[in-house]
Structures are given as structure tokens and as C-alpha cells.
Amino acid sequence: METGTPGTGGAAGQAAAGLEISQWKYLSSEAGDPQMHAILSVRVDGTGGAGRRGGPVLAQVLAVDCSSSMTWPVEKLHAAQRAAVAAIRKLPDGTPFAVVRGSEQAAVVYPDTPRMARASDFTRGRAERAVREMVAGGGTCIGAWLDLSRRLLAKQGAPLGHVLLLTDGRNQHDEHMPLARVLDECAGQFVCDAWGIGDGWDGRELLRITRRLHGSASSVREEAALPAEYEQLMNRLLTKTVPELVISVTAMPGCTVRYLKQVFPTEAELTAEDGTGRFVTRAWGDETRRYQLCLAADPAGRPRREDLQIAVVAVEVPGGDEVRLPPPQPCLVHWTDDPALSRHTDVQVEHFEQHQRLGEAVAAATDAHRRGQRDLAEHQLGRAVRLAHAMGADEQLARLARLVRIEDARGGRVALRPDVTAVDFQHLITASSHSTYGPASGSGTSGTAPGGAAAVTCPACSRKAPAAARFCPSCGHGFEARP
Image 1 (cartoon, one colour):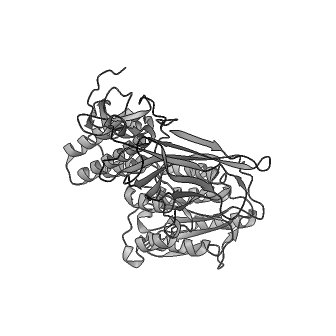
Image 2 (cartoon, one colour):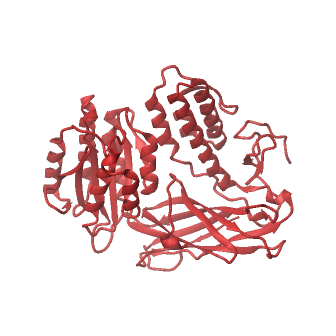
């Protein structure tokens, strides 16, 4: 089913939110741990990037790696400085901002006051000079950089705090300020986007940071590309004028919320407020995001062969009426002992689970290559190619083609390129964290015969595949033609 309506009512020109739910409602009443999975599509339209009454929406910290590894080649530090300058120049007047120099410690290089500066021609010029005068030296403690950023952002009043973090190395001095503890303290306080440059950074470490802090991880192969990438990121960031939306999931008796996670455009962790069913999402412009909801339900004593509401999903705006909101939408379950119904899966759910499997294949390939197991790395990259091909993920295929020569995308037959290096896998890890939108409509819950939008179980590997597929994207098993 895919249901939903845009927000209604409110003043003309006001931003509006929309909510759609895609699910396959039939669950087996005999399953040991029945779970209902659904994809929530949340969209915001009409923000216009016009800003917010009463002051700027954004407060920005630029955290730049200045460890000793940034000194060679010298183009790395110069590119980082040019990128920071490009971001500073994009800041609208009045925006609170600061620049942090990161090594095994963290220090504010601009401003030289206890509070963040406000963007103006004067402060932007002073900040540019401070950035160009930064020198590299020392180690890397990313926890210290994030902790200082948190303390800076806590002293200003803009509703959206953002940290743009750049590093060329691994978090080698974690004992100075453990990253795990810092992420716990920073979660919910600001959004962080992280970039890798050079050849010594750790893609999984960047994902650990950005998934917890609701940002995205990216990288550049050529240092000269970084300033333009920073400009584009700032352009996107400055269109985000809705600081927060809350997704509220109210479970009915006999049902519990297992998790809600963002799956598009990147994966992000969401934690319910104080154990409730309220999940905060941050920094919205005109965009659509998708979330996977998992509900555990108990069929004991529940009616069969009829639709039952197991949860209600709503979109809310904390502390204001700046966004027109959609009506709440139900999640349904239909308990059945008919395997012809219960074996299907919603096509959107399956799409994002395939994305997760693609990421797992890339991670396994990375580990195998690090251990010198080239054959296993090649096998796992072939699996990733097969999944990307089945999903129509052309950008992921193009990135995989940098590491392997693709001989048969459908069958996953590839040959590892002889000149592949460890950093090529790090670039692939960050790229694989960016998902594709997926099917535009769900598989329906009306009880009609399962069709092209549902997913079916592959008889060879037991994975799910779209019902209209000619082969299984996981194992390549061919399906017989179906009417």
C-alpha cells in the first residue's frame, strides 16, 4: 500500500509537509517473530530558502584537519584552505560561524573571541586570512574537534547547527577524547557532514560519525575538486529553512516499535525521544526522505482475514506552525495463514534492504582486500555489481567499475583491476552510503493478486526479489516467466 496526502490548510506560501506509507500488510499468524516493515516517504515543499523570521537558521563550524599528514603533498592543505574559504564566502550576513583547527587537540582559529562570529564582509575577510595562515602539525583526535564544535554551537541561538568536517587520516589519538563518548554528547545537537581527502582516511569512521549526527559522508579523489564540492554543499545547506520535523509513531496495544531509520538519501540513525515513539529529523529544505519502520506485532487473540490498525504515523513541527502538516496515516496488518500472501514483501522495503546488502558486500570486499585475499574481494565486488545492476543504481555501478572490470553485470562476473589501492575501497564505502530513491509506488494492501510492485522469495537463495524481475539480484537465479 502507498497512502498519503500533502499538508492542507495554513497561509498561502507556507511550507507544507507530506507523508506516504508503503507496506505489504499480510503477515503470517504462525511466524515466530512477526514484524511489519514499511517505508515512510516524508517530503517538504515550499520552503523557498527564504530564511526564518527572527534571525538566521544556520550556525556553521568548519573543522579542518591540520595534522602533520596534511603537509604532504602540500596540495592537500592548500585545497582544504581554499575549500574552507569557499564555504565562508557562501555564508549569508548574520550567520554565526567559526573555524576550528584539528590535530590531536582542537583550537578555534577564528574568531579570537569566546563566541562565534557573525558573517559580514569584515568577518569573512578576517576568517579567510586566518584560514590561509593555518599550518599543519600533530596527530588526529576527531572527538576533540567535534566536542569543541558542540561547545561553540551551544552558545548561539540559530536553530540549526552544522559542522563541516574534513580529514585526511584516521582517528589515531582516540584515547585523548573517545569518539564514542563524544558522539553520545553531540547526538541531537547539530548535523555533521564529513569529507575524506588524500589516501589515509577511514570511510567507516566517517560513516560512524555522519550516521549518528544525521549528515552524509563524502570524499574527493583529486584535491582540486574539494572547493567546488564545498560550494555545492553550502548551496544545498542554505536552502534548509525548516530546522526540525518529528516523526511520531503511536503503536496500538500488542505492537511495539523496533526501530525507525533513515534509508534515503543516506542512512542515518534515529533514536526515539526518552523511549517514546517520537523521532527527530533535522535540517529540511524542499526534499523527500525515506525511512524504514519496523513494528513487532503479536497475532495472539487478534482477528484473522481483516485489516487491523497496528500503528499511526504523524509528522509534527516542534514548537511552531511554520509548516502545514499532513493528516496522520495508519500502518495496517492483515493476519493470514495463507503463505501465498504472507511470503511477499513490499517493493520499497526490499529496495532498501538490497541497498543494505550492497553496503555489506562492499565492506566485506574491503576487509578481504586489506587481508590480501584478492579472490574474495573480487567475489564480493561481483555481488555488489549484481545488486547495483538489479536496482538500476547506475552511479554505484560506475563507482564499482573503478575497481573491477565488469564482464557481466547481471551475473556479477567481474575482474579486479590490478592497480586498485586501499583508498579506492574507502571511496567506494562512502559512495555506497548514498542510496537511490527506489520505486515510486508501493505494493498495495488491497488484497488484490500480488503483481509487479510486490517482492517474492527466490527459490534458490531465499532472498527477496521484485515480482516482475527476470532473475534474483542476490544470487542470479533465473525466474520462469509469469503471467
